[in-house]
Image 1 (cartoon, rainbow, N blue to C red):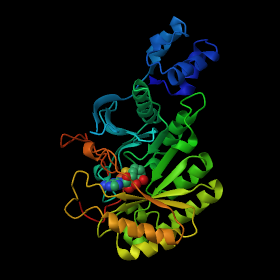
Image 2: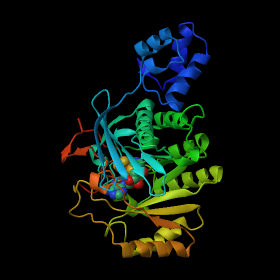
Image 3: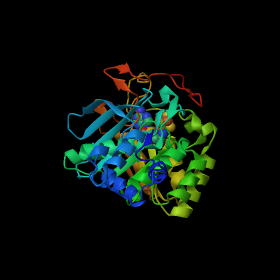
Image 4: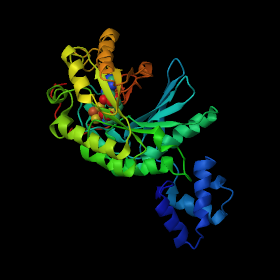
Length: 364
Ligand code: SAH
Ligand code: SF4
């Protein structure tokens, strides 16, 4: 059995059974344009092809475990179960401006062990297949369609590190943006990475239009090392070199995410250091107030005050770097950044503990 999103396998199946090439175009049109989610309802196809597909492919690799909408109705979090009982999450954000964004997961858990992140605490459970990523998107497209809305943006900012599951992420973007498929604009896809330098270079080659967000979170090697183990493999100099090469190739502005944790990432001296690091670079900084998440580090990690964030913004303004403070959506349903850790009714649903690549330098 294979996924309905696995184009080469479906074409192979159709050909092996003596069917003409145009039949795949009909399948494609039914799934992505007409959002038909049952082979038997694809009326453009003869009965024998519908039976062939039913016997050999599956429509959806995920089953919905639960769904929760925040009080303001803007955010909906879906908890999905994979065929092997792993739990993953995706979040729809309905912005007041009318655009709708989906945050997708690309791994169950994450091996990177960032000290402030609830997903990182799980370790890597496994990479998601490309169709498991697309099925999150298809689910959201259908969900929004029932509300009379459309999906505009997809951000790879859910569970996991996209550039450590590159091939599956790549294939999912190709389907999301394929003209005959979901036809989203490449520019409206954002991939966020903690700083996997070789992956950044691949993104420049494969997807020069897709937006790149870098989880920077600290302006020096020393400061970064304390909260992000990735720094041991790809130190800031290596990361910035990869980013500079990416910008030279794509001419795209990089979105730097900077988490504001009181006393950890918001020290006064970091204002100048952050400005120095980004001065002259094509950058936009997004300050993210720390979300306490499960509260597993809550005793010593606290969000920074708005006044302090403003000081950082002023520091950047002096060197001509624009910045914004991320409006936190979905924190009442544990769907805000860094809170995608399979928590439901206070019970962790992780079915197994994965392995961390790097050891967090702050013990949990
Ligand atoms: N692994 C990728 C993408 C997923 S994380 C990455 O790290 O970029 C999405 C964003 O949420 C990242 O910027 C991450 O650093 C941030 N984040 C993680 N935990 C957080 C927390 N507790 N509070 C606020 N932001 C957090
Ligand atoms: Fe992984 Fe990103 Fe969380 Fe770090 S912040 S542990 S890279 S999901």
